[in-house]
Structure formats: C-alpha cells, structure tokens
Amino acid sequence: ALIEEDMVRRVHVMTDVTNGGIRGDANEIAKVAAVKLVFYEDRIRILVNEKVLGMLERHGIDYLGVSLDALLVICPEAIAEDVKKVVRSKGVRIEVVGRVESGRGAEIVVDGEKKEFVPKFRESAYTPVKKVVGESVSAGDNFEEMKRKVDKAVEEAICKRDRVKEMLEI
Image (spheres, rainbow, N blue to C red):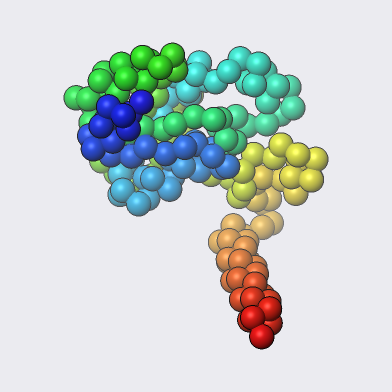
C-alpha cells in the first residue's frame, strides 16, 4: 500500500523486522544513520499478535529479538499520519512506537525508564539448540572476540564455497 501510494519517496527507512528482531534492526539503523532511536516498549507490545506474544512469553523468548512479521517505518513526523492512514486502509494495525533523536544508538522506554536497547549476541533463542547456545555473552566471554570468531567463520565458509565452485567448474 505504501508503495502504491508513492509514500516510499517520503519515508526515510522502511524495513521488515526479521531475525534479530527490532532490537537488532534498531541498532543497525541507528549506527548507519548516525542517530539515536528511542522506542516505547508498551507501544510495540500492543501491536504483537496476542497469541504469538503469549506463546513467546510462555517459552521465555524475548519478543523484541525475533521476527514479528512487522514493518518498521521511520519517517518525518509531518507525514506519520499519512503513513498510518495508508497502512490502516489495508486493515493493518500501525502505531508510532518511537522517535528519532540526535545522538547515537538505541534506547527503549520500559515502565517509564529508559534502557539501552542493544542486540544480544544472537537473536532470541526459540529452538532447543538455540536455547542451549544462548543469546547473551556470559561474564567470562569477550563479546568483541566472539564477533571476530563469527566473522572469521563466515570468511572461511565463503572461501570454502568458492573452492567448491572452482572444483565444480573444472
């Protein structure tokens, strides 16, 4: 609907909230745009399907760290009502869930208290294997070192893929 109404020219960001959830997307967007994003947890929570939210909570899964089948739109305040009107015209719930400020990073307001809104080491653990691995860095772990190891593993996988492709082309 936003594309059909040519609203995409008027918004700053429009992204599908996927793995890593809004927690991960918020930080990535804030970093790239060099701004601070402030979210209101209660405004996000009311947009999540009640059955899905209940299931996630029963299993101890952070709903802010998983794909919610949602679209995050960041736009000038002057067009926010127009964006909401277009989306609502298709029967989709939409609300203002935060704001953009000068600064860096992301924050979330929970019960009136501002908190750092940072991604965990990985997306919310929602499978048995992911629950064993966990989603946060333990006190003895070095987050930056873990990130370097993940980056190294990615590079090694790419090299292996390229070697296999070369062998198949011969």
